[in-house]
Image (cartoon, rainbow, N blue to C red; front, side, top):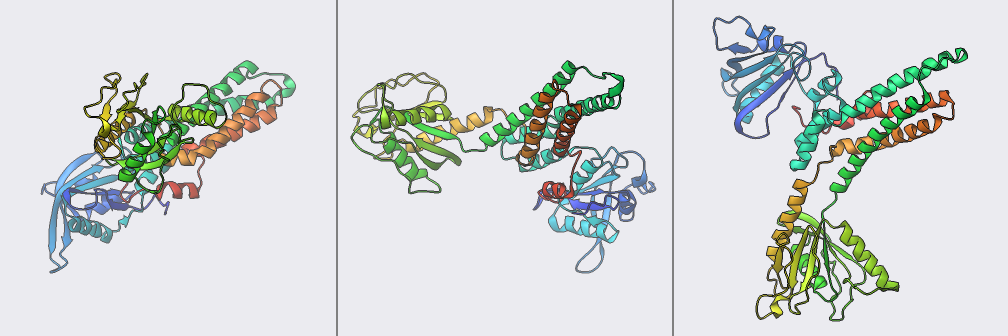
Length: 468
């Protein structure tokens, strides 16, 4: 990607395909002068209004040659002008808004090229905003996160990142560590005079504060990774409650990926000793479906004990639990917890609707049969709705995927250096302490973009679409 910010660039900034409006974005030191060569204001009395020193909106046309006759075609539109550092890139910039016809917008872009405006590379507008100090690297990745957001939680996290919600505390602790390092090095310069520029307790407290911010950011990064996993839907219930048959029926109807997975089905209670995992797509929502061993209330040892511990672990890690109850036997399901769905199995064996206790009103209850398939579609819809609701209500991680991937190693290095620095506070060795703080500053600088190499910028901005 070219890093020359002194030429003038342009790109189509509206969505691909036809639409009510097409937008071309222009930025660069000569942006307004180049536009003045091809844009004609609708006000005949105005003289070069584009070159005004104030932001404005100007109606007018850009003349483009016809590909058939060579005659000029007037493309009408409005030109939005930012003549100074108030623009996104902190350069003279403009947007030409016209009819959203792809050939027409492309013709305007070609006309700008004839007047010395270079087509922009992917992400080059945001790169210029970063180089100019308008945004930091985490905010730039937030822009990409907004573009790539697949849901409200992703969008909220990306918008918070664009607003500086993630980078602000890291900038603050970096500034504090820079001040701390200056005071520490000043003390090293006057070590023979026995002058103390900062007390040991204050030094320890300020390093601990930086550690807390880094740890909180790492926790948010871990939350992002966890939420990127498929939601876990776990089947629970007493032995022989129909869990394995229900698991097999759901995988057979809705399974994706490895379709051959199945659970052992047997009339003998306790046939399932380990948990079995399958991936299903329910109303467009992908989830991990997990069959577990039947819950035994008596103390188990050996293999039985291990299977009960595995069931308990899966129960605790579940996002949604299917509490399976044998609808034919009338065995009560016991206590219900949050995010549970009561499933009355074997409804084909019941002459009348099951009278089994349904649990609290907040717990949906579904009657179904693994043999006939009755109720499976309804159950799939309820699970999908429950999972979607949990995703919507869950807190966003605050980190976009690209930021989380890039920052993981830098955060670990910052945390390690700060931990060593904190341990050196009371043991003396200020030279080593200063070196560890510098290492932490370098790692934090990599995260916010204060220290950045060309290959990092290439990895970040090459993911953008053209026009952003």
